Image (cartoon, rainbow, N blue to C red):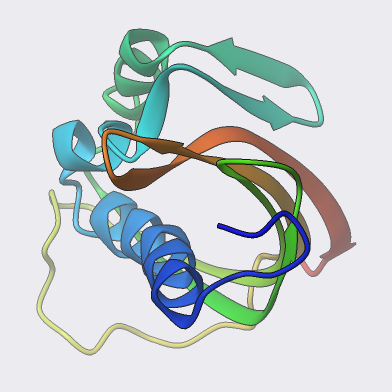
Length: 145
């Protein structure tokens, strides 16, 4: 990869990793979601820093089984960040429903506005031919609830 450009293949792979992570978390497929982070990857939330793939997986497993979420990713922008590195910026709208029974509930559920609209600032790294999230910073912009 030229440090000043991103190949179309790398662009597609990075956007897919960002979107796939959201889909896997929403589907409660936490082991697969954690595999999209580097082994020493970091998820930085406003009041929490999770370091390492195993810690990330442990954090996911604490989510209430009654929680249904949809993370809607948009406006993904990628920039080269050095050899084997790409910086990404995107928006996420998070819809959440907390029911009485474990998910999946009978769909559709009653709609509410997104709970949060935030920015993701990601650093992706190329490891063994796969683009992985090395560092994600979550910055809430709007809290709607």
